[in-house]
Length: 321
Image 1: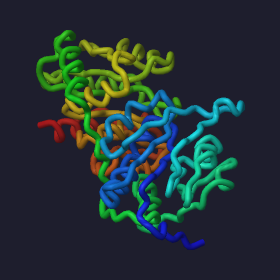
Image 2 (image 1 turned 180 degrees about the horizontal axis):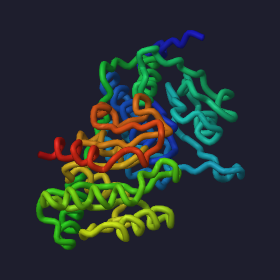
Image 3 (image 1 turned 180 degrees about the vertical axis):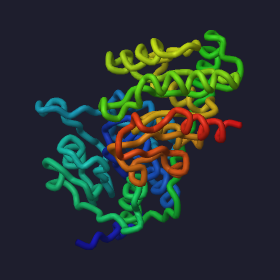
Image 4 (image 1 turned 90 degrees about the vertical axis):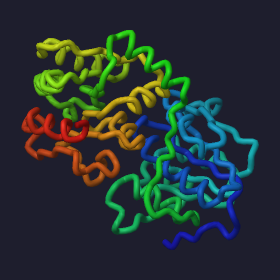
């Protein structure tokens, strides 16, 4: 099906991307491309409240609607504004419902639509050259009439949040270079072995670089950190759950590099231009690596355990030295 852009400049645009953290980051270039192409437009983003902090770091978004649609109609969003364009960038029932509730002249969506999403928007087939998911998202903006040669995330941490993070680092004795590491992941199969993280921490510590571990408050993330802590012979810092989402963005922006698997903070680092060393096995870097940094990724189809810490250290040291 041919997708034609709106017949007139879209003045009011709705983006529906509710979750999760990394996916919201990867969708930011859609808002940036639309704002650059249509600077007079007003862009509203519907997002799960847990991840609103990511959108708050993007000046291209004018309004944030915090929504969490459930089975009860009372949880469904309502919009007073009439939109010229509504985009379902998630392709699920919950994100499609947001678009369905919007009065919009045109409704487009990310091509991979599941559940009830196909009922509410027209899918945009990606360009054959768009291998990375970020480029596939941007193809939706192009179908809406935006011009974009390369994805721009437009992520800007606030100075207030950066100051808080600098104070937090100082309180924990971090006064020089540091690397943020994320030992957690949504799936256990996406986690690099704790012993490997421990060995990497020891090698970067030998260069006077602090190892700062980040993650959420979930028990799985805490357990992943404890396993690393038990394995390592050098002090490592536990920042899990000590920052808000916005502060996490600022913390990563202050770091010298990020190491992690296929997880949200890897995409935050890439969006900020921070060297992002990715660890991949069950997912392919060509589609989901930190955008523009596939040269820093390590991929072993046989399993993450076969990605050796010495090889990762070499990539980290090359990035920070």
